[in-house]
Amino acid sequence: MSVDDSDRGHTIRTGGQGTRVGGPRVLVAGASIAGPALAHWLRRRGAEVTVVERAPELRPGGQAVDARGVAREVIGRMGLAAPVRAACTDTAGAHTVDADGQVLETFRADGGDGFIADIEILRGDLSRVLYDDTRDGVEYVFGDRIAQLTQDADGVDVVFAGGNRRRFDLVVGADGLHSELRAMVFGPHDRFLRHLGHVLAFYSVPNEFGLDRWLLEYQDRESGRSALLRPIQDATRAMAMFYLPSADFDVDHRDVAAQKVLLRERMAGLGWLTPDILAHLDDTPDFYLDQVAQVVMDRWSSGRVGLLGDAAFSSSPMSGQGTGLALVGAYLLAGELAAAGWDPDAGFARYEARMRSFVEANQEIGRLNARSRDVPGPDAEPGPDFAGEWFTELVGHAINGVELPDYAGVPDSAAPAGSAINWSAKP
Image (tube, rainbow, N blue to C red; front, side, top):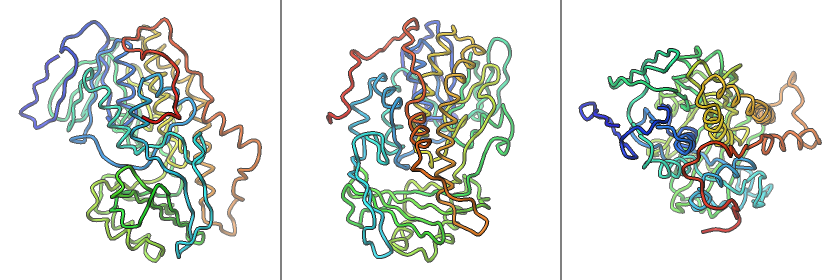
């Protein structure tokens, strides 16, 4: 497959031999985690995959994300246990502190699926692992996006913002919470976004705080705000994070200048190390701020167009399982499409049937955790009781409550040798 967009200023990398070998042509929108993970499995099942990403390159940094339970199993089946392990944060645990920095509580990493998961990695680092794994067999188009699409019984005609026109058999939106493809095909964002009443911001800062494998969090219970510093692999830097309640969030998710103004205003007077963290707001390379929100949809497909990850079923950062949903969803979506002979009606339907209860359990945890951070008021509902057996069962379903078929009868061009994964062994 040849692509000539040199006059459009796009960054394009084309992998493989450049010729079609008979598999379906699949376009994936989004190159964060869900998109490259899906590209991995689609390629192995015999599809010819193009991933389009509106950013000019992979986005670095980001919050720490976790892979628990079945998501770890998916990473093992991808053959990526070693590179993922090598990129992990290696966090020893977490301290909650008071305004003077005195430790109030300590949570140690337990090497499993707890508060600090065994597999904890910065979003940007996981994205890089997935991209490095797929770039030689998948076409990546950076600095472009889907501007228009029209589907018929046999395929999807796509017009890109850069002017290129191409036809695909299937299109999948893995372009995040504010998915442009979802809005284009399924309707406006406000039909599906559920704001949970909080805002989250994070960005990297110089490690002038002496962090050494321990996460620090300061919470102001009266205002519901919190500031957090976490170590990353680069010991010279740290990742800062802020939570704040906000029922009236109205800043454009792409207006970074307005977001920084909002963060400074809402974090004024918080105390602890907050002024020192905010001092780096204008020189950080990876600032991010957005509402804590979920995506709730009755269906994740329409004809030959489907959705994956946050674009389809964001559980919000409050669930701690967004990455797990993306990885598991990618495995199941590619597997079910291939098992259905690439028939979109059957493949998408079976993918949704397998994922739905797993998604709902994780979204419920996200809502409960968001409620637990609400500022108490005279008319507020009691906070959730996380000590009950019901919550233990809910967590179990959210971590392991989905079957991963072997897809023994489905083509697999790159199955990793062996199936035993020793997650405790570090490279």
